[in-house]
Image (cartoon, rainbow, N blue to C red; front, side, top):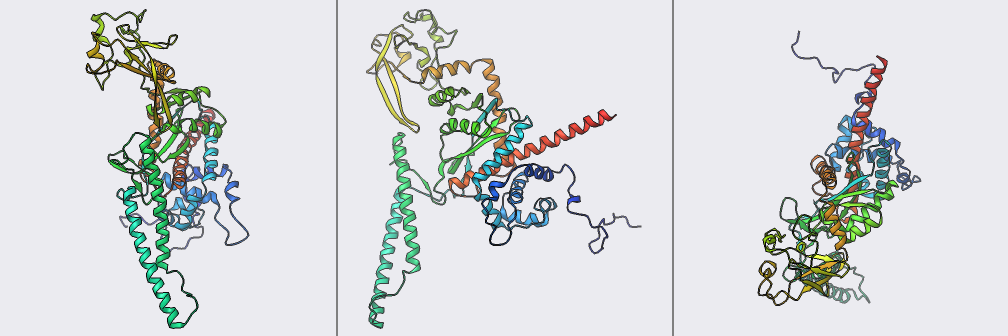
Length: 530
């Protein structure tokens, strides 16, 4: 008797009842549950894009979408790897129903259906909402960095691009001269009235490169102009344009250094961590997408969130105003410091000076070590500030500065009695020619209210939920799905790729929740029967 286990199915043995592909996938397998969810979704919009009057019958889009989404849940993004798996892995073979789409079919399908994929994301979200795992009472919004499909070194400034264009012009001029000389030689040899020689292929290719360089120069010039508006010296620090994927932008990497990157955004429901919106920005400033995200969530689910948790860049005055108009509460760390209760700044009569014994308790700026703006009390009825010595800072003018979101106007209040003040060395540079000034813009009151709210226990408890709900999707998408660099190029294609990842993330959670619920109901049924 042999010590080793016998082969369950010898390769050469014929069997009367061969095991079916379906029998090889057990009940409760993730592939089976994923298929059940996709079957409940409508793919009519996908089907409408196909022309059934010609060519071979296509593979149904639900099957191809299932392969891509299931691949992401298994850390497989490569279309060539997916092509191999559909012919060699039982779960992929079961999901593809025996079809073996090649990598070009999968790659083209992945980039083709952006609007239809948005609808699928919406349908899956509404299934989760029906199950009660999405509630939309409280949501988070956060962003991350993902590298573009562009080498770190494949970037150029406007000056470099102009040099390349000049060299290309010289090359084109030389080839044109050679082509013209060849035409004249042909005319003399064959006595032709006109040349029949077509434009050389090399010249045609160079003309295309010239058009691309000219477009790149225009794009980098616009980027330099924007940097000048933002107060950056574009001559000393010129904009760098990624050459392979010009839609991306050179931004700081999460792990350090700079490279062409995109900024993917994700909004999550804090109840169970499902994603309710996903987008990609080709810029570093995330706050520009705050209100648009809330509006898209309402459009997708028909319900407006009650509260939004976001990090400090989202707490701009404009966002506070627009979210307030929509009835959405924003909780975000805010760089605004109204006078704090319990400090000597909050006194009954701000026109009276603070006693010298209390000066050490006055708030000071971490950056300048001088008295902070929160040491000054604003009187809205008189539109003036009072300094710790009770002196008046009156309105002296409006300061305007360009920002990414537009022009920012700040009212300037200046004190005219700083000379001889015993607190002057603690308040400003003693050599300053003007008195101490503070700025106030149209959103200051809203920021102050938010800063006070963020000190409450309820706000602190709620904001702690942002870390898990907001950061977990990025950890799963990057670590589990392996999406640390986009495969596709161009902002629109990158948005589609990110939406595939967000949809797969929700499917992972939904498959687990369905499996958990079925196990719970089965246990209850056994208990009831017993």
